[in-house]
Amino acid sequence: MSHLPKDPVILLSYINTQLRDFYPSLEELCEAKDARRDALEAALAPLGYAYDAEKNQFV
Image (tube, rainbow, N blue to C red):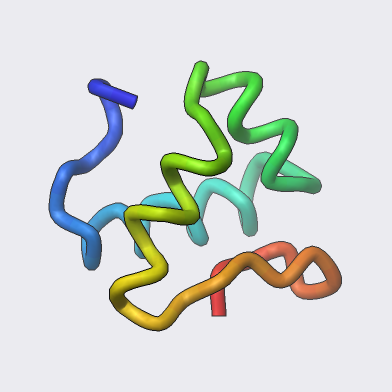
């Protein structure tokens, strides 16, 4: 995940934009970006965000 934004707010914006524009699921995004799903979820949880598969975004 070293290539992803470190700031959680910027990370949230980046991930949701990637999900909206390029990836049909968080799993596919993680595979393409070589990122760990648990690490992304842990980074965004303190902001109160969790992944919603139905919406395909962190809400």
